[in-house]
Each structure stands twice: as structure tokens, then as C-alpha cells.
Amino acid sequence: MLTVRAARTDDLGAIVNLERYCFPPEVAFGRSRWHYLLAHAKGRTLLLLDEKHQLMGYLCLLEHRGWDRLVIQALAIRWTVRRLGWARRLLEQVIREGKAAGWGAIRLEVGDANEEALALYQGLGFRPQQRLADYYGRDQHAHRLVLPLVSDEERERRRVARTQARKPSSQAN
Image (cartoon, rainbow, N blue to C red; front, side, top):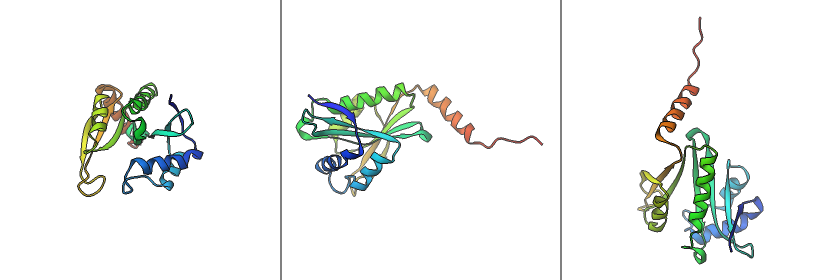
């Protein structure tokens, strides 16, 4: 049975190893990027562990208050436990928690060639927002997908409130 827990900085080595296992070198995050994500970034990483506490997957999520969005930076599942629903479970947990915390949306980028991931994300309600040419390198395009967590009306109300908060207040003479 697999379990989910929050990552700690002492998980860095295992995360970097799985990152290198799952992604080509030109797109994989390096040790320094992962150290930043675990130690300093505003957000969290969920780990998927087997009964021997071996890392089987992770989902890294950043908070972006200015955009009122959560941003999925990375999602990886070891091939031995793929297609068993674990990526979906991690995503569903993040979606539930994002809604409960009042976030406006969740955003991620996914390569055009990753048809399984695209199908998973679209099945959860993520919709294409933008095509990203050469995002992962030459001729390796991607899409930015967004899952709204609030209604269109609420999103517009929040946008107006942010805009008004940025305007300097006028002073009476």
C-alpha cells in the first residue's frame, strides 16, 4: 500500500533521483532547484511512498497569491506504479485542498506528446489556456492548462478587488 506525506528537506536526494528517472536531463529540475522548492518556496511537495518508505512519486505545488492560483511545478510517478490511479489521487487531494483554502484556480504545463497526462488532466476538468511553443526544447511544445476552483463571477469579483487594491488612493485637497 502506498501512503502520501509532505516532503521535507531530507527527502531531497530521493526526489532528485526520481526526477532524473522520470524526466530527460534537459527538462529535469536539478538539486539546487529542488532545494529551493523544499526549503524556501511558498508551497509544498507531496510524496507518494511505498511500504518500505521508497519514493514512488511526488507532486510539487507553489502558491501564487498575485494570480490567485496554485501552480503545479512537477508531478512524477515511478513507472512501476503508473496507471494505478496515484497521480489522480494526488491531483484530487490538491484540488480538494485548493477549494477548501479558497484558491481561484490551479495551473500546470504539460508536453503535447504526453497524451496520458493530458487525458488525466482534462478528465479532472483542466482546460487549455495557452499553447507554449518549444517549451521543453526545440519542437517540444506544451500547453498551459487551468482548472478554475471558483465560479466565473467570483473570479471576476476577485480580479476587480485586486485591481482596486493596486490603485493608489486619491487624496482630497
